[in-house]
Every structure is written in C-alpha cells, then in structure tokens.
Image 1 (cartoon, helix red, strand yellow):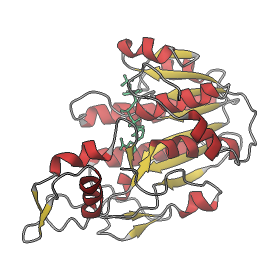
Image 2 (cartoon, rainbow, N blue to C red):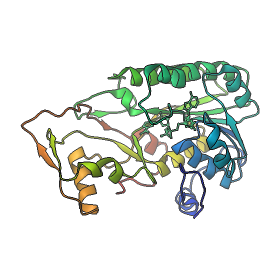
Image 3 (spheres, helix red, strand yellow):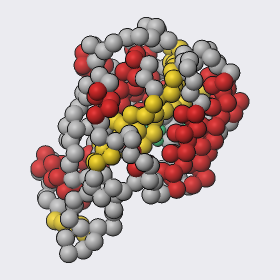
Image 4 (cartoon, rainbow, N blue to C red):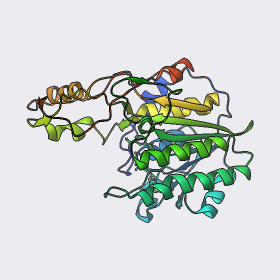
Length: 309
Ligand SMILES: NC(=O)c1ccc[n+]([C@@H]2O[C@H](COP(=O)([O-])OP(=O)(O)OC[C@H]3O[C@@H](n4cnc5c(N)ncnc54)[C@H](OP(=O)(O)O)[C@@H]3O)[C@@H](O)[C@H]2O)c1
C-alpha cells in the first residue's frame, strides 16, 4: 500500500493495479515526461501511479493550499488554470503525453461561466499550444457520457449522436470537438467518455446511503453507468502505451438500474431498504446503457467489471 497525505488519492494499491495491468503492450518509451492538467480525484491518483513507475509527472492545481500535498508525490506541481493561455503553453513545453482531467472546483455547484472557462477556453488554449509542441504526441482528454443525454434506457456506443440535456454537457461536447480537431498524424488525441466516477473516498454508500429507509418517487428503473477510478487509471495508461486515438467510452459491465444499485448498497451495509413509489413520476429522467465494447475490443481488460460496494 502506498500512503499519501493528499486527501484526493488515499491508499492507492499500486501492486494490485500493476499486477492486473502487467500483460499490456508497450509501444511508447518506458519513461516519459507527462503533464496532467487537473490533479483532482482522478489526476492526483494517476500522477501517483505514473511517478511510481518512473515517469516524470507535472501536475496542475488551481489551489495554492494543495501544492504542498501534491508535491509529496509529483515531480513538479504548477499552480495554474487552463483558461490562461500562457500557463497552458508553458505546461506543454517538453512533455510527451498530456492528460486533461480538469473539472470546475469548489463545494458549490459550478456556474455555466465556470464550465466554459474550465472546458471550452482550456480546450482552445490546448489546441493552440499543441501546434507549438510537436514532441507532445499523445493527448488523453477525459470527457463524460453525459454528452449522450437521456436515451430512455436504450444502448449507446461511440457512433451514437451526442444529445446533451444540459448546457454543461453541451460545453463538454464542444470541448471534445476542439481537442479532436487539434489531432494530426503525429499528435494522437483520445477522448475517454467516463461514466460516474467512484472509488476510494467516493464510495457508492456515500452517494446512496442517505436514501436508506426513504420513499422515492418513480420506479427506480433508470440505468446509471459507473466506472471505478482504478479503471480510469488503467485505461489511460493502456491508451498511452498503445497510442490510441478517437473516442472511447469507459464504464463498467454492471448495467444496473438505480433501484438495483441502491439495494446492493443497503444490503451490504445493513441499511433499511428504499421504497420506490411508482405512482409518482421520478424527478430524474436520464437513463441510458453505455457500451464499453470498443475499448475492450482494443484490448483493455476492466479491473472492476462489476460495481464495488
Ligand atoms: N466526477 C464524475 O463523476 C465525472 C464523470 C464523468 C467525467 N468526469 C470528468 O473526469 C475528469 C476528472 O474528474 P475528477 O472527479 O477527478 O475532478 P476533480 O476531482 O473535481 O478535479 C478537477 C481538477 O481540475 C482542476 N481545475 C478546476 N478548474 C480548473 C481550470 N479552470 N483549469 C484547470 N484546472 C482546473 C481542479 O483544481 P484544484 O486542484 O484547485 O481543485 C482539480 O485539480 C474531469 O475532466 C471530469 O469532467 C467526471
């Protein structure tokens, strides 16, 4: 077990992850300069994983108070925002791989302006910066399955059209396109569309536990797609090693309704069950089943194919 003082990446089990990923192909140099724009929940754990394997990782944060804890594991920590074009250009210099894992920070729900700055302006700055950094040959951009919108429970894959429900998902989709258009023969761009992220310190019991014993409007028949943080790290490294490009979904195999997921959590933690009141309409409408066949066909094997509760 590798312990860190950063609250966003507690006790990542490096040996376990390494063992599970040991069979993967390796096309890229063994040791690289890697930049991670946005060292939050995913980015800081990914940085720790790569530092542990000998890469030189530069990670970014927008919070001065996070610099000290991130510096315990990263080669270099930069205080910056992606909407600062000069800071982005400086970050990209000398890097071989870039992972974009930025999302608006803060305890309050982010405004549309924050979303546009964090995703759209950052994407435009990255597209400019990539033109000046030909040695940066692999870009992995973390996006979201929210861009598919509501499919009333039916399946989507990477060929399905985007149909974002909210402005925020629309912004993420536009940012994807800006980054994709920056790709060229030597600079590969891979978009990873993630389901809801869970893992250490973001356990499902913390998301669903409050519902225990309550009566919830609706049938609970919406499908929610999840992905464990270990698989995000595993898939990003797989993309880097195999120089993948284009769009890939990343969710687990569980394909369960919210009712089934909540039951799993309540049973596991001996919590009172949730009652679903099907005489009332649910106030949530998004339901879809996301296919992960493309990334599996490329050779990625999920570490956590079923929900961990
Ligand atoms: N959370 C989900 O369930 C979910 C689902 C689908 C996709 N995603 C995507 O997955 C990625 C990783 O998510 P996460 O949960 O690890 O996010 P997170 O924990 O909120 O971390 C986001 C990181 O982005 C940084 N940041 C905030 N505003 C920024 C800006 N304007 N420019 C540059 N960096 C900025 C934050 O800085 P500080 O260090 O100062 O906080 C933090 O380091 C994101 O791209 C997100 O959109 C998330």
